[in-house]
Image (cartoon, rainbow, N blue to C red):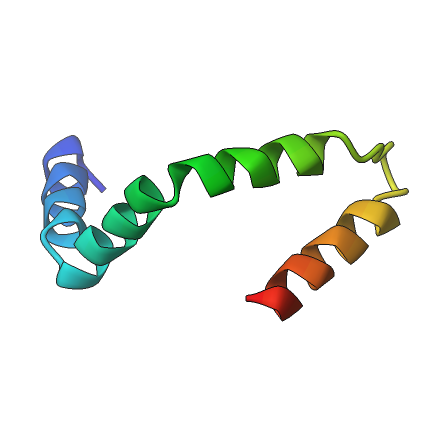
Length: 64
């Protein structure tokens, strides 16, 4: 894929209503998203021992 093709593809994706809606949601929920990030990085997760983070994700998705 050329740079021009990649830019055209990005422009096409960026023009989609669903993409705009997703970015609007992220903007409106920026504080909650930041809180989720803080909670997530506070959970220890050494390589191949990410079960606690996985459990946190499961809880968050279930709540949504």
